[in-house]
Image (cartoon, rainbow, N blue to C red):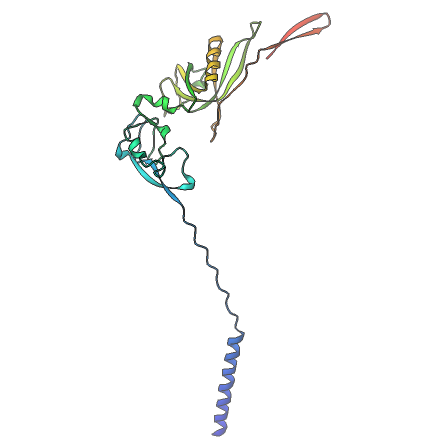
Length: 255
């Protein structure tokens, strides 16, 4: 009996020692790194359209609302409540210069004091609206529409001869309207008699003089995200070069 008791004590002591050794040699799990909490997005309130507003439509108090907007993504032309607390009150009673969709940010360039002044409101500062004669042939078959970007080509007689020459005098010009239409059409074509262009004073003078001397045509440019400003090509006078071939002399006009 004593031997059995001693054996049980020995077995218990061995098991306890083994358990202690196991706990000491066990690998301690490394702490799991938690993902950092996302930084809060700074928001502001921007004036937007509460519903669709047609071109020339009036902004009533119910047609406008303040919308939370990320500060980093606020359009530069929008009206913020922090910068213009009375923005909604000032916009109420104004008229849309073009069609505005629900939720679209409202800027001063989209507001006009009267329904008929939308074209003047569409003009950028320092620009002028100049109308030129247009027909199907001179407007890319009627596929040039308002807000497209075009080049203006002048065709006229060369200096000192009867040769007809064409050259580009303006590039990247914005089309404001075809006839009295300032919106894109569902049909995709506008067969108008006049095209109204957005030009600077110098460009307006060049176009007016060119139209009096010859004919103008419009060339449609590709659509780009940031079209930039229109540029004007200098219309240098043609140069005449005299070339001698044996006993004959020939005058050539270079554009």
